[in-house]
Length: 327
Image 1 (cartoon, rainbow, N blue to C red):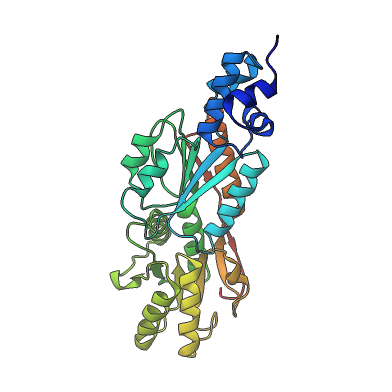
Image 2 (image 1 turned 90 degrees about the vertical axis):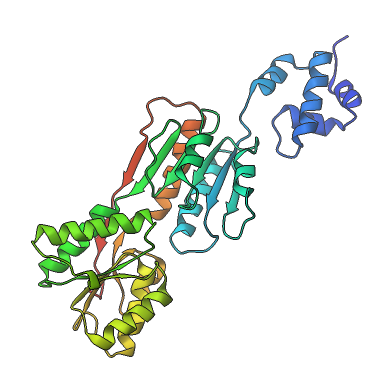
């Protein structure tokens, strides 16, 4: 007599609905319970082909997402794009904010057998950790950093080109000296944006003084304080801020010192966050499609999980200058 689903449920000591969920890849069944059900079904010869497929499958339909913090106007749109694309393809997201985590937390998550791939939005995870953990069974997509290794795929913003364009436009408007507000020294984005700024100045045979490079850690409050100190000494004719949050802090400091933008000083930011179009004056900035970046990151990790051949190990999203009222 052929085994039935009732036989499997009885021998596995679970309900019929649990057997159905387990053998059809349902998300509600614990991994150990599913394994027990599959073993029983194998023994009884119930749906042998389906059970064989599940036993051999290593796809849990879950992608790990690792980032520095839950907050931030740039990555929130990136994460939205990632989540929507993964959910549309039937995948779950296991997200982990790395801020204030206990030592070893990341390793435990990366060793978690429930994820099929990972998307990294954090610069805090060392390259060697990613390189050592990446495999055909666990491919990685990293954003805003370059890692050259098997099963690791880099998705980049054209930080250099966007910065070059912004500074070039400032110089073409008649400015011969440009101040640069930078992010953290270990930030890939900040390094590339500084390189683009310096290259644009070099293109016009303009040198930049050391005091014209101001580190404000990508933070609006720090930028406000640094700009406040700067404006007590001088009024720069042009500032390129390597992110919009710092540019907003600069605008606040300019208002305090009655500096009119763009009459007294031109200002360009980078990222085109939502506040860039709401603040007064509205911020001229370098724009990149953050939601699209999330969608592409999700698509890339899914292609790698599914064994697509010939994937580019590095992809770059173009940036453009959005002119508003601070230029």
